[in-house]
Amino acid sequence: MEFSIKSGASGKLRSACVIVGVFTPHKLTDAAKALDEAAQGYLSGILRRGDLAAKVGATLLLHHVPEVASARVLLVSLGKEADFREKQYGEAIKAAVRAAQDTGAADALCCLSEVAPPGRDIGWRVRQAALAASEAAYRFDVYKKQTEQTGKDDKKSRKPGSVLKKLAFCVEAGERPAAEAALQEGQAMAAGASFARDLGNQPGNVCTPAYLAASARTLAKEFGLDCQVLEQKKLEKLGMRALLAVAQGSREPPQFIILRYEGGKSGEKPLVLVGKGITFDSGGISLKPAADMDEMKYDMCGAAAVLGVMRTAATLALPLNLIALIPACENMPDGRATRPGDIVTSLSGQTIEILNTDAEGRLILCDALAYAERFAPEAVIDVATLTGACVVALGHVASGLFTGEEALARELLQAGEDAQDRVWRLPLWDDYQELLKSPFADMTNTGGRYGGAITAACFLSRFAKKYPWAHLDIAGTAWKSGAGKGATGRPVALLAHFLLARAQQQRERGGA
Ligand code: BES
Ligand code: MN
Ligand code: ZN
Figure 1 (cartoon, helix red, strand yellow):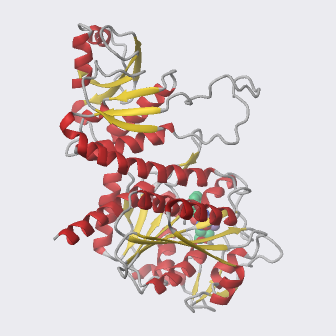
Figure 2 (cartoon, helix red, strand yellow; figure 1 turned 90 degrees about the vertical axis):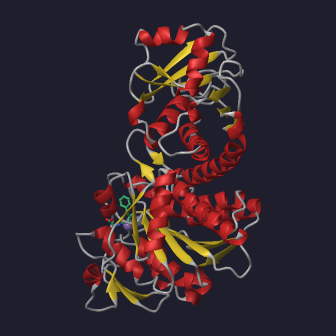
Figure 3 (cartoon, helix red, strand yellow; figure 1 turned 180 degrees about the vertical axis):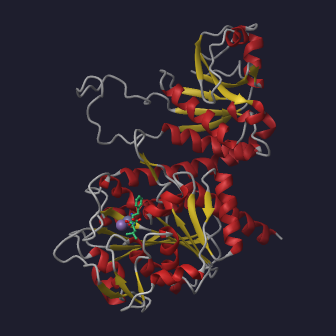
């Protein structure tokens, strides 16, 4: 989807479909009012008859509205004005894009950014509009060769949602400069999120560790990043035995991806982002049950999000030094696979008794966290679909946030609110560390049934002592199950907002 900014009267600007909002009951927004006045009460008449449902995101499509330049008018319900918040704003835009996609309109003019959730300026509104519109327009249909209705390979019939190509956001003339800048940001974030979604949705037989490495290399070429990939032999030499223990049951060789973006001053400490890249998690010898095991192709969504946000940062030329570290491998059962009870020495030198081979994420991450030390990082944030327990704790709404750094916690919580890609903090208290005691090694890799998201984070914390560190457990937020199954692209928007805020601080410091 191609986005742009326009300003002018909603009735005069020509498009295939003009999108305007209506509050319940029958309160027209300014753009809707302008159309209604031009059409001499045509819209208010329809609303009085009750044809637009009250629910946020309900839509009504009208054709040939008198004295309106656009061929179609799409009315979108915004719910009650008093209840209009960030969530309603995003839902209205997504619903509008979906409805516009069901028409034959190739371009649309969206006037919904004129309505503000309390405290949200035009920059926020445009950024979020681009993110929401792009999320709603996203398709992953590379493997769909036949149309659903006919079952035939029918090139002529239009694929759902394939016509709408251009979306303009209408803003007031005075808001244009801020809106244009925000659109750049929103678009770069949306592209980063779509990139992550594509990687997540690819099946495990395509998106292998080598495929992740190839994607990182392509990204590096396209955006002028530096990419280095460490392979099996090198990992053995380094002593990443925890990562190798996970990879050894698979025919796919492990890949350790290092991607650098240097937008900051040379010599400035980098932020390091670490992404869990398990391209398929069968559980290994501690095999998972069959039901829904297909979803474990998403176990590389941390890696995908980190790659996606590197793309965003490079597109926006953020004045920051960033390093992405992605340990990538498969977790499979095999004659050579790690057995429960095996003990390995991690890169940090600490030994681990692997009681459950399905707790593999922390094993690959602990070596990446130890590796991060060599960059003397400003901070390290790891992103991982780490535990089912986090899904039990927070559901699919918030990602789990773990950190001992108050300032970093505040920044991430704020970025989550701004991005509407939220995190919720869980404790990292030492009391939980006891659950990782092993009779034979420095620690086990599981903490038992209770507090699983926390004990997993506690395990990681033992490898992240040399720098400020935060851990995001995205097991519940990186993908959706059920009817709308697929990768969500979270938490690219969260991380991008975090980086944008850091870049802003950087500029202020530089300018002062
Ligand atoms: N990739 C899974 C976590 C997961 C489970 C994400 C379900 C999303 C949905 C992870 O590798 C895993 O298997 N974790 C185990 C840890 C346990 C064995 C200590 C879990 O959560 O059950
Ligand atoms: Mn697992
Ligand atoms: Zn896993």
